[in-house]
Length: 210
Image (tube, rainbow, N blue to C red):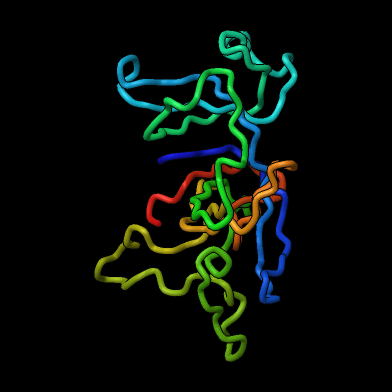
């Protein structure tokens, strides 16, 4: 990994390229992120940067967290994230990383928490077909169907797609293209959809499988 940022999903819109083609994009407020801690192979066994995003009130943080920010000379922040970068020599504790570390045309991987949908049935959760609506099928139109044979195996196999908790899990979308960068407003427009709801925190990094 060569670069990374913490951001906030603002929502989706569309922009037009030079040929007039419509491009669906997700707008992300990426940074500015302060460098709170710098880890090295000598001290910690690996190279990494700990970045902080979005100002917070001191009363909302613990004494340990306040001491951590005070040591680095950074004002209290809401979100912390560690990025294992290949080279951290260009960064110093207390410096600020901005969205212009990325450029239009870069491929990025974005990680976020998907929308929580609670306890959902198999039709919504897995996309199962509903049963036919006639000939005495009801009232089980949206149930899973057969659980397995009665004699063999006389049990339900593991990992069968059934109803249960859906959403509210960490998901990473690979190889999204950064279409536009607005350094003044700390915005990055990424082609396609990004996990999470509006206002959700996301983590950006340069693509590992570009």
